[in-house]
Amino acid sequence: MDFSQDHENGLIWVLKQLSDVLDLNPAFGMYDDDERNPNAAASWKVLLPATAGAAVSGGTVAVGRQLVKVLKERPVNLGSALTAICAHEYGHILQFKFIYADLAKLPSAGVRTELHADFVCGYFGAFRKQVQPTYDAATQAETQFRLGDGKYKRVSHGTPDQRGDAVYQGFLLGLEGKLDPKDLSARGLEYVRGLKL
Ligand SMILES: [Zn+2]
Image (tube, rainbow, N blue to C red; front, side, top):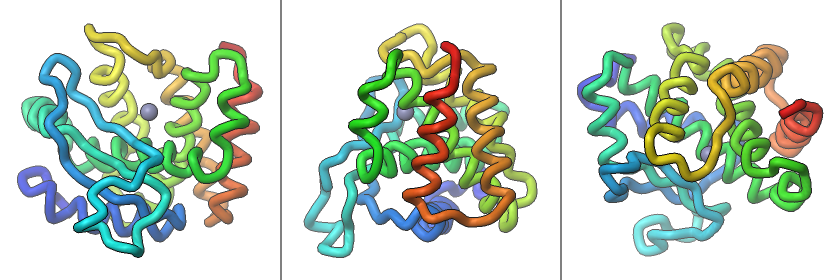
């Protein structure tokens, strides 16, 4: 599926697959992010209750309009970049559900939390690739790194190598088959706990 020009239609299917693979159902929306810091976000709060309805649980994922604008100007496949970004944010939603407190106790918890979300992004990539063979999570994660940790550093997401490795390890796990999301979360935790940062 090429949704470079029309990401909103393609994104619906990506979000549906994310919900299926990770068994999560967060609210989703676009928001007006700061143009100096194009970004995406995950919150444990269920926002947009009026449109999201009772079926939604586990928080909210939001993608900034500036982020989409910046991605459109880059020589990357917009659909793949948005997919990787959404998968990373869904990774945070998975953390809220199962292991947020465990992650918070680790040294350099902020970076490990981000790398865990990348691990989940890579895991999802194994399933995304089955329907979209050209999807390349590792490259897309790096795209996100450049945006997330650019001039306006707030939270360190880890180096490109660390992020690429986390995505790749998650991807390899995904190739082994679908896991219970709780087990996936735990495997990711094990991975980031073992990292020397
Ligand atoms: Zn993140």
